[in-house]
Length: 277
Image (tube, rainbow, N blue to C red; front, side):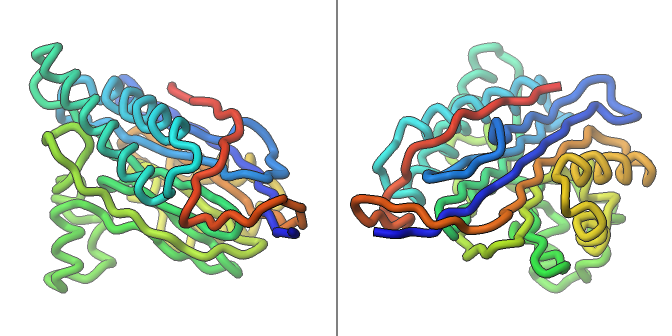
């Protein structure tokens, strides 16, 4: 049976930024150019600077999430992502109590691509953007006080980046015993770009600027990653800055013995590399 699988190129960068003393962000990106055949998983986590050990929280959340998700081959994707987020949440919550460290917390936004489907698991205010046909689409909802205000139509969306309470999270990994992530799925097509980023990046870069950089540097995901970081610095970000860029170059035909539906089975993962600055 013939199926069409995306060829995906990836890149990621994470820096401390011009103001903070340490980097509390963590990212996971695929290890290499992936001709695919199976799904791939990427993620970003932004440790909460106002709480204790934010950097530890982001590293632990990604580690726990990946351990659970990559061990669930054959399980339904949506359920597996839910379990992964729950494991990440409990690990951070438990570590804070073991260390008597008060509250520890982090955001977590993870993207799993299988065939022409994207599955997102999201908690907090990191973001996932889809750049399609030169246009930006934000695929995630900010779990913040200001995000709630926008959804309630109390303020307009263009006020988010400058609002005094922009970074006040209403949901995060590790701060409570139980967590309910946003789990969504989206159809992909050749030529799409997926960008995962921390709020240190998107808070100083407008949506259209994401699309402009992708359009200018679409031949190289490494250049896109670097130019997004450089633009955030030029716009005087005051936070850690992290980004993961995935490019769906094309869909190639492969032959499989048995049909597997992405909503039913997770599939094997390629080797992954973790970047922690």
